[in-house]
Amino acid sequence: MPPITRHLARYAVGSRYEDLPPEVRHEGLRAFVNYIGCAAGGSHEAHVELMLKFLTEFNGAADTTLIGRREKLDALNATFINCMTSAALAFNDTHYATVAHPTSPVAAALLAMAQRQKVSGQDLLHALILGVEIQCRVGSILTTPPAESAVGLSMQGLVGGIGAAVAAGKLLQLDEAGMVTAIGHAANQSAGIRQGQSTDASHFSPAHAARCGLQAALLAARGFECSANMLEGPKGFAVSFARPPNLEAAIANLGQTFEISTLAYKPYPAGVVIHSIIDACRDIVSQKSFDGAQIERIDLTLNPLAAKLTDLVEPKDRGQALVSLQHWAVATLVYKQAGISEVANSVVRDPAISALRKKVSYTNDDAVGREAAHVRVTLKDGTTLTASVQHCRGSVKRPLTDEDIKTKTRGQLHMVFAPNIAESILEQSWAIASCADAGVFCSRLST
Image (cartoon, rainbow, N blue to C red; front, side, top):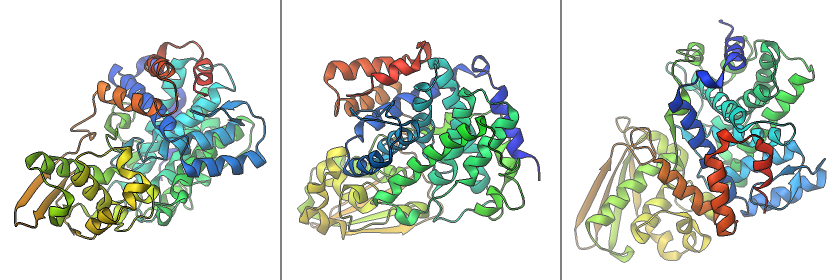
């Protein structure tokens, strides 16, 4: 097998910010701003509060900022929380090819690093782009045909730590051997299964990966050794998580094409495979005015992956509703919008909404893309309303604009910061590349 681990490490170590295409640098900035908003918006969710109380019991030095909170934790635990919060409302970015959410673990590790050593905003942004790139490329080993990975494996848990390790390793100025070791330690900690999805466990997986990734880089910097072929070895990452793995996918066009350019930024706080359903339902409510009591049935035609990941007729709370295709179809049709308020527990537990969720049926169709959906709503008077979406909002073919990301981030910042502070953070986030000391920026993210 080719030395994939070393090949990726060599690229990351040798990469220079000024050699990146301007559009790639800008995409890194968009990913960073989107992350800051998501981390703020999810910073006070119930499972975050529970985990923070738990970690405080075992915490080390309280020297690292938590976005949107007044408490501080040590670097490893802060990385955990700052990743968990960004995933808490299912609003973080997505890499469609692997269904990973790559920026969350990478950015969380980098904010911790920026408070351990002086880091310029440009260096932070460069490391973020590299962490996303390598993470997604490692994920492609498991998902690019003929590779196939078991649907129960959490891509966030498998590759998020590798991205965080590369990013932190870049700031630590690891040499090639050190970066190989960091990737190896991160791969050795890969874990996560989707059976925990829609429970608190689903937020644990990316957070744990982020912390593992930072730990991997710090261990490598201290000379803690690891096998040099952890990705491609005969008992390594690739063969452990895919049958058969596609190792060449990780290095194809490396340095010429950039996976960060394919990131999707979510316009809705929902599992990404649900977004096309939401878009189609929004199209339907724009056709005719009706209320929930008039709905007889809701029929969906979907890519099979959507149902595999989000078929949940009776979510018990917001955490489960975030990844319930039935809930989002109904909530969008009833409330004519799809925001955070539409997954409030009061809405999720509303008997009328619950009854309507039982009227949702779906058909799997391999010909329907992951970004597509077809919806037909039949009203009790026999009226039939239909809508089809080929590429949902936020996808590569229909990307959110900078203004969309700004609006989304502003709304989440306003959930925890005073308006003037929220606007200042938003402005500074967009200007991170010109920041002389990213640690100073990080300190302003505390309430």
